[in-house]
Amino acid sequence: MIKVDISNVWGMMSLPELLAMEKEVSAAHMTLTNGDGAGNDFLGWLDLPTEEETAEMRRIQIAADRIRKDSDVFVVVGIGGSYLGPRAAIELMQGPNHNIGKGKGNPQIFFAGNGLSTRHWNELQRLLEGKDFSIAIISKSGTTTEPAIATRALRWMLERKYGTDGARKRIYAITDPVKGALRQMATEEGWETFVIPPDVGGRYSVLTPVGLLPLAVAGIDIRNVMKGAAEAKKSYDLRSFENPVWLYAAVRNALYRKGKAIELFESFEPGFKMFGGWWQQLFGETEGKDGKGLFPVSAELTADLHSLGQMIQQGERNIFETMVRFDAPEQKMVISADAKNLDGLNYLADKTLDFVDEKAFLGTLAAHVDGGVPVITMDMGELNDSKLGEMFYFLELSCGISAYLLGVNPFNQPGVEMYKRNMFRLLGKPGYEN
Ligand code: PA5
Image (cartoon, rainbow, N blue to C red; front, side):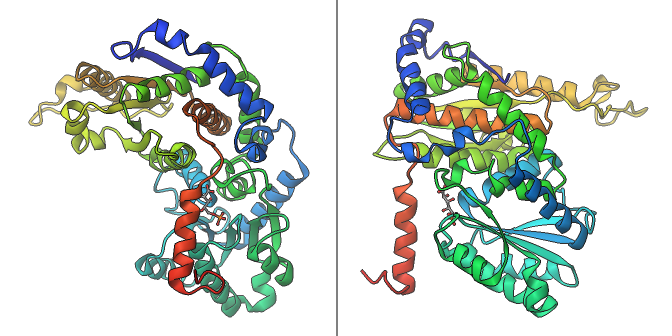
């Protein structure tokens, strides 16, 4: 189980205060699993994890094996919930520089359609020059402007390179089973498709083909990811404060009620940056409504201690932190001795980098707690494929419970839809004139 340690929040809240929330948390958990709360038509994600390989998972693996064999590059087109999960997972498991040295057999993976930058597009075109590539288009609605523009351009590139028939075999669409422009296009063009279940919203979709196809192309064992999530589904169903999901959801709400309106979600792993981005969307889009919600910010330590550190230590006292830790990897980096010792580092000779990292974590924790910043620590244990599935499910469950504690509908995003509609109107899309 993931361990949530709240011993560094006691300066801000008491044990009786936490225990007084037990009924509330229990009710929020029940609302979620009984499906009788707001947004209850979007609870499909609760039951996605599976111990057994499903027929769809097998089809995903077959498609992934084909892409690995015939492509130097795999381009994943999507935005928001149709993008952040797979990128988060791949960078966490393989590092932010995972593409270096990759090619056919183990293709590079790039992301497109997650913005409107011409520079980004030009760079992608350069990266694709002379390369065999395939694309996955991910969009639940099938109408989002950013991925739609990237799709049209990439599809044209594929058709020019491989002809219409050749291109068709290199385009995979992940979308609603029935509705939307992407579904219609895929059917007409004969692209292979995978389904985003209608009752699973974008930010809760990483354990559908949205996440699973890119993960499988990256060589991540999707069966183990799903097994980890299935295990999490069982173990985090516990209805007491023994459940770390309850602790996390309750404490962040208690701190919010005491004026801690910003949550900093941090890890000491550079590969965690995009996972922080996924978490930010999950909690931000779930909770930020009706004039309420914790503002979720992710940060990378120790790098951001040299930028945000001052603000955390001595700025406005409206922040709390959630620090994520992983077990150290087996392969060690040992600091060597140096005869001249001009840098004065010999006192660390023969120590590992993990030793220094651990002290940095403890030192930062103590400094921030002394500075009046409550810190929740989340010990994930060993990082592997099944842990990844466990982490996704753990955080999704915490988020659903937390939003019901806050009193908002966890599963809509009226604000996002407002921006999409405005953009359609400003661009002159037929039907959006008013
Ligand atoms: O979580 C959400 O619902 C959003 O972030 C969507 O995933 C995002 O806007 C992309 O939408 P779509 O998948 O319909 O293109």
